Length: 100
Image (cartoon, rainbow, N blue to C red; front, side, top):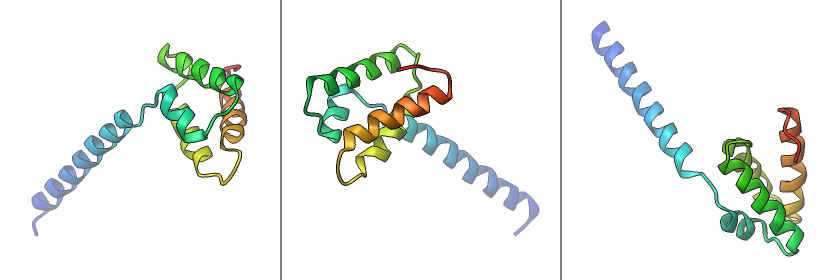
């Protein structure tokens, strides 16, 4: 395999990785109903927190990637998924200077 072919192959692989990551990033934006269902919220206060977080994310005040990654992490917990989500998101948002 020539040097040109190796470089071409590397560029193709890189391009596929970039396109794939942008598609995945756009497909993980969550809405309030998805978060509520995934975390099994029960109390009205829980649902209010979720709606507030989604509103802040839609306004650009809270990074959607932060909300999504915290949701994915909390959803894997065996119990108390919402409490993990709420506490984790509050701590992570505080680290970047956002008070929830």
